[in-house]
Image 1: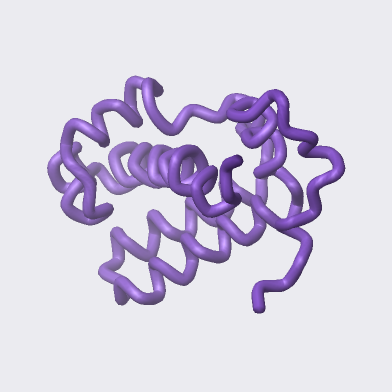
Image 2 (image 1 turned 135 degrees about the horizontal axis):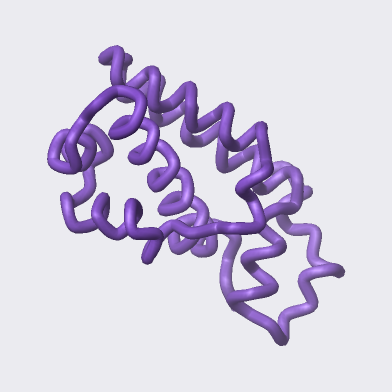
Length: 127
């Protein structure tokens, strides 16, 4: 049994970081080491994101809302925004993914025997 937060940690956050890393390198002309320092990961992780061996989510590539969140995050990082504000924006992106049941796609892949369609954990407010 995987918790939604485990799925986010294993798949969603790497996916978001991969998009942000790509934006920082392509739009803001940062190198892998600079991006790694900004995102708090290793240069090897950035290399994996760029090669799409980690953080890959083909099904979501057309999700404009996710792309918009990542564009804003990259801009915030490049322009020296406060880390708390950047973390808040990452959190808003994961909230969007959870609330729009996009997390269910990953859950289905990671736990094929789990009845994802009858699960509504992510729909419930946190207490």
